[in-house]
Length: 456
Image (cartoon, rainbow, N blue to C red):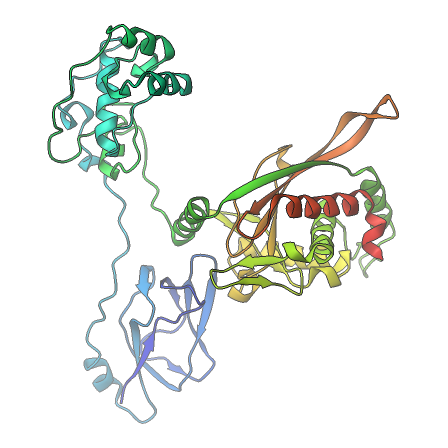
């Protein structure tokens, strides 16, 4: 009986994969354990091994096919002693999806024909502004009126519907003076008629949430752009981080850390590093290695922050598994330093170099980037001195690390120059309250400013 080869589930969350390459062709004999194909997930490219012996009778999904659902038949193998032609004839054709096609720019309606609104003039006019507001309001479906915060408050206090006020600000924005005019009956619109069925396109330059691809393309001149289709990684990043922002209540805590002692210790440790046969140092510590170690120990000191939120209860983790954001073509990935609180700085440094190299080649295994109890995102090497990072559930925290730079500080009433680094802790308020988060970032600051405490 023919043996079906299925698209494997290479991670617990995998639903689809891209068949990157066949390493065996029709007619090739395979043994159990032979690598037969390479599958691309949203995070990595992984090898698929044969689990039976036989001959590849028919390949149903050609290499390069994207978004093949898990458990779809991708090939058929004839078992030992079975007729290959018969197995191939009975294989049929698998309903493999075709590669996803990006929307064609040529199909996008031209701005002038896409809306019943007047074509925009060569220069902005005051009369055109209210029409832009009305069209944008129809697109998002929530009667959104562009207005300043002060205007909204004044209109609410006066009991005036903002949608009836003609805006005189940029692009028809309602500002405070418009509300004051409306109180005396000036600048009020007639009651709006019921909107026509179906959304209308926004005029050139106006954007509203929920717009379709064609509506967005209509905002730009045809031929002024190219469309780069989203790959699996970019789609996954978009889905996970959008869900995080929409569902996780986050607060942020920022501290400035004096890393003068750390830089001295790092220089001394690297200078004393043992050499290999080619007289190259066996390790070279980075500031980020110290950050990972300090965060790991801080979580052990404040164990109520080493948690993950679930609806059924709080998961309190025994070890500090630190995910570290690594940029790669098309996105990023967070390989995890497991039990980081137990590892030396040199081991953390070695693991990170290996992870970073394999991440950029998409060679990480799922168990190397899934899970973790927190994460570190460091943009200091790009000169960024402060930013906030988005929590990646099920983590309850993420530490954003800025660059180290010389700054003036006041000590004992005197201004001195110190090597400072700003860090910002994002906290899931469902799991961690403000005072508890402050304890965690305080413990981190104490460790990073006194690196000798990490050695104890």
